[in-house]
Image 1 (cartoon, rainbow, N blue to C red):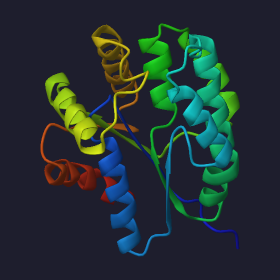
Image 2: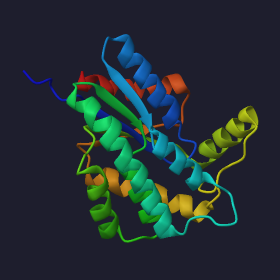
Image 3: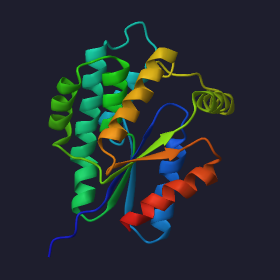
Image 4: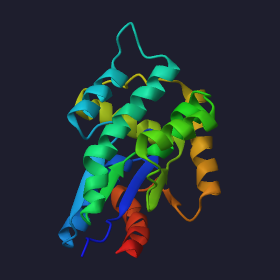
Length: 213
């Protein structure tokens, strides 16, 4: 008998919302329950995709234009889906991803102003129509998110990357994009108030996540 398909869960949100922290905790908590779970991030998760991640974050004098940026994200996603996500789901494993397709619509669609129909067609090709079982959208006030990003940069001695520095108007547009997607797909996308402490946010995340168990 073939193994039952695993669950595919994604964490989304703007910069500083805390999604990476919550995604990592989800992997740990699910594993502690005995669930065979794989954690991935976008872009990344394979050798090729991690190389693409480096290109996307590169602060060189030749940054990718908007179309190149979109195609690089999609190339990384295609590799991750083909090499990691689909095999894991087919084996009955759960997959928790720190970002997936919704980020492309928010950042390159709403943020960069690219045609959503073009993105949808290209994204469907890149991931073969794969859609998460549940998407947890973490929503934090801009001031809270900015404080977190400053604290992270101070703690890690790093600077904001090219996309994080895209400007307030860009980040306002992508927040509007995430809101629009959540309104259009309420059965899949769950909005989580991410203004509280990591434990408080986790309490809300777990309330929804455990429904899939």
